[in-house]
Amino acid sequence: MKLKKFVGMTIATLFMFGAANVQADQLRVGVEGAYPPFSWKEADGTLMGFDIDFAHEVCKRLNKECVLVEQEWDGMIPALLAKKFDTIIASMSITEERKKKVDFTIKYYNTPAKLVAKKNPGFEGTAAGLKGKRLGVQRATTHQCSAEKLYPGAELVLYATQEEVFQDLASGRLDAQLSDSLQAQEGFLGLDAGSDFAFLGSGIDDVECQGVGAGFAVRKEDSALRDALSQAIKDIRSDGTYKVMNNKYFPVDIYGAD
Image (tube, rainbow, N blue to C red; front, side, top):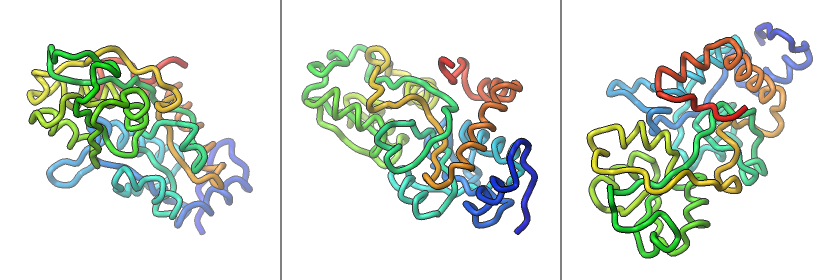
């Protein structure tokens, strides 16, 4: 089994890290490919986006060949536990509920969730305002958790992908939707399809559901991989690479408070 050299890691740690992979010179990364601008697929099938760039940069830092494995969102954690891949890089929020099943690195970004609806919709973004309204969210996300908790009177409509949520919002089949604010801005409101829509209310402050930012998920036994990934995130932040990747996709710093 061929092992690459990791700066600052012991030989014992290297063997532990290599054992978590099918091949020691590969890192299999679970990605979604349906969450622009963090991940999407071009017409030729090429995966693009901030998460994809971050995955490749981390693999380079760890001297690993990056093997991207597409996975539908609601099967991400089960697929990780089944060893279909070694880590998840898919804008997955770090929550206490998820930490019961997997471990997380430090965060690599943190942006608030917000509601989106038609401009001047005639109702407020409150529990009372959304009572009886059709509210769309991506299934098995932190946003489903917040929607169920904060808007119990809404008619919750669940979707496999965020793109499907925006499609039904634009077509009038939904009254509102709840998602990451930055993803909503760049992936819908900033497009022609979202020109008649706007944020409804301010950011959602719900740490219980929304967590403390997005991180890379790993299996609990893969602590060496977790720590190596966390160090790579720190290095990417400290040497200016993060800013370059951030500015490629976003007009603001998405990392959030240190």
